[in-house]
Length: 368
Image (cartoon, rainbow, N blue to C red):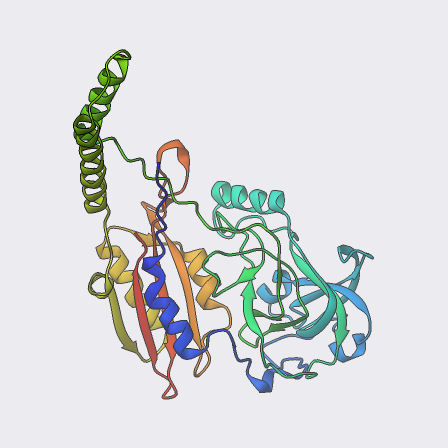
């Protein structure tokens, strides 16, 4: 058996990452100050400025109930255990917080599975339960600026990675800790996580590629048969000429077998990448994503809207920023499964860059 690495389809996106410095995601500097939003956002009993929490070791999470009902306090505050896990409710809420180590990201695989099941049975966003959050020691919100921070997030509907991971990480490695976290709820009701110095577990959402089994060529089988027959004649002494001929035949068969196998492998070069991709410009992010939806529909698929919103609908795309994600494709609204019920690698890699002019540059292509 031989195992072949199939990472060429990520080539174009990787080049874009290097050219535009995706490793450094910028936060709008005006967001680096705690703020309680004016109307239409409503006052909330228990709202607290994060600056009043400085020095405390606490656990934070997204409060969807407040967001969905138009209240300030879209980030809930709990006490933290010594190990950084969720403690008890403090009945305090805020819109923005910055924390430093010791930082601990807490998620629940079983909780994520329950949410997915409730979504399948009841529709909508499912029956949301509190299953994920992050803990750390609160520091002044504007302390340290945004240098070196990378955007991350959590999506309980992700079929392969129901945990926190960097949004530019194709392998979706699980984040379990970090040096620093900036957690922000915007006036538009969207949450953003920015992380400095992420620490990972050994879990990832990377799909293992199947091994390619190479069938023996006919000439190779025939040669083995010839050698086996010769070796059975133990009392026969082979001449040097016979030995040389067998060796020559063996080498020839190996080379022919290798050449035949090599020609069976689909090789993707730059021209093929360009044929399967598209670069287009748009005035708004909404137009950009609508165009991707239209092109995917022409292919006979639809996008996983939950994952699309998670990757591109939270926080938007800032000037000079690039966002990239592989979005799974659905067939008749369902995940595409292979034999044994395992998800197939069917998706589109979407790369969106916001130019200084405000326009959006879109690059996208199939991953299969």
